[in-house]
Length: 230
Image (cartoon, rainbow, N blue to C red; front, side):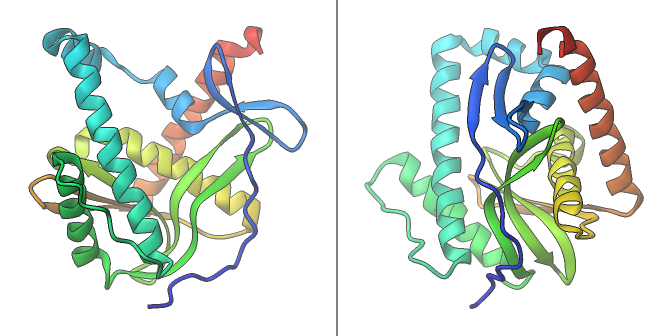
């Protein structure tokens, strides 16, 4: 399986933290916000805050750490798999490792015939003066230039709950188009959960334009809100 096509030279991002969150240094030496920082600042977090209050701080931290570790395990293994490297996750007998392996196998079983080319994995994208971030996977999915994102979940979420995923991907797709002259107009979110349920969420055409416009509105809102502290 040879999927990697080294068509583009992606920049190395220099990350910094300030009082607003995660930022990166652009080619002019200025700090620009990460995509996740923009979305976090402009999204309604009341649901998450209520969940933390309900389960308690300690339990919330445990659950989040567990989910993050599983997600990292799966992402790293998928990246190796798509590069035709050793992709096995070490099974140390723990719940985290066993769950990571099950989710990874679910991804591999379902995506193997759909990703045609991979141009970049965990690659930095940056637009001077605007924003930056790291995209999971860029390439061709089912023959179309696509921004592809891998998501692990305790349980597969309905589409209406994951708008921020689409906004994040539209930001990366548009940055890639500006930087490299590509024509990415398809977002592909691949999600697998702990019960090995797998789902594809795809946005293209008018739906892609909708998310692009909403991302731009959030970006403008973020810059306007924080212009005095820049």
